[in-house]
Every structure is written in C-alpha cells, then in structure tokens.
Image 1: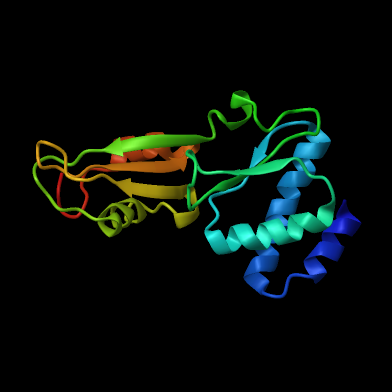
Image 2 (image 1 turned 60 degrees about the horizontal axis):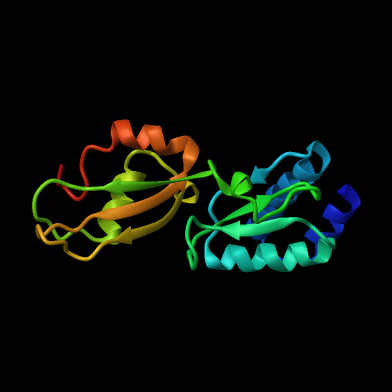
Length: 167
C-alpha cells in the first residue's frame, strides 16, 4: 500500500490536501492490516470530496462517511477491515457523541456562539462536527445539539461553562 500511497499523493495538488490524504491513507492501511476500525477527524464538504476522489484510486477500500445523523455536513471517515460490515452499529457506535447544550435563561444564541465557546476551550475545529441550533422551544430557549469526537466529550462536559456570555 506504500507504493499506492505515493502514487495517490502525486495526484493531489495542494499541500494541505496532500497532508490530509496522507493521514487518511495511514488510517485506511492500519484498518486493513490490523483488522480494526479506524476513524478520521471531522471533514468538511471540500475535504470529503478530496478524500473520496483520492480513495477512488485505491480500489476497494471498506469505508463510509458518517456524521452522527443522515445528511450531516461534517463527517468522519470510518475505515473497516474487509471482513466487517460498514452497516454494523458496532462499527459506528462509540466514535461520536451528541451533546445537548442548554444555556440558562432566554438567549438568542447562534451557531457562531456555540462554536466560539468550544474553540475557546482549545478544541480544534476538526474535533467538532455539526452544530444544530434548535428553534425556540416553549420556554423561549434556543438549545444546541453538538456532535463531537467521543474522546473530547467529557472535557467539554466539565469545562464548558458559558456560551456567548451565557452560563
């Protein structure tokens, strides 16, 4: 797969895309050789396109893009060994966490406020998936469901104390 990796990287023009594809291919190779599930960080739509185009040159890799719900904009790439079904709940379970954030009181918080609060904790954007700000509920509050890489969920739970100046 190293020779294939070098050949694939030759087709990628931008330096940041080449770096991304190199990391993605490393995960794909590890999943195949070690027979374990490997996942990437979150990818934006452009990165997903770059990854799809590059992986199409690899032949038959066992992977799927998954963002926690149907139609997610930001997704992770999940790589499985050939003997494992991508449809398996066990493959997708545990890699992402959906967190509900409910600030106290009535506030008109936006996607930007929630993203800013998470990034102020030192969390990189690639660890954060879609941020779904809900419509105002019966109590007049806007909440958000935030999809994150599972390994950072506890850190957020203990350290996120305010969003947009609201506790």
